[in-house]
Image 1 (cartoon, helix red, strand yellow):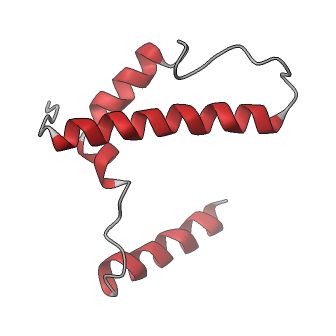
Image 2 (cartoon, one colour):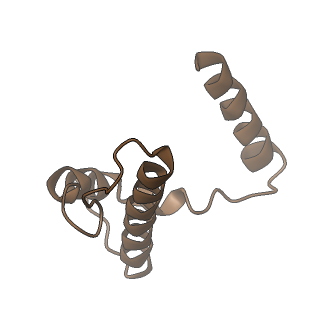
Length: 90
């Protein structure tokens, strides 16, 4: 995993910083409010829109879908806060 993450990091550096082919969206939106997203997930991560009781616990597909929905909601919240210029600072 360390080798794969190093290769991915190098590839993203080349694509974003060196060539400028991609601006890094949608990763910049949660990055601008990372503390808000972290605290929000810590407090609300087990509640309905972000998590729900799975019918088949063994199904990796159901868990993947649940995690994708939760992550998508947090990215949308971060995008909404970014558009309204709300940034949590410490």
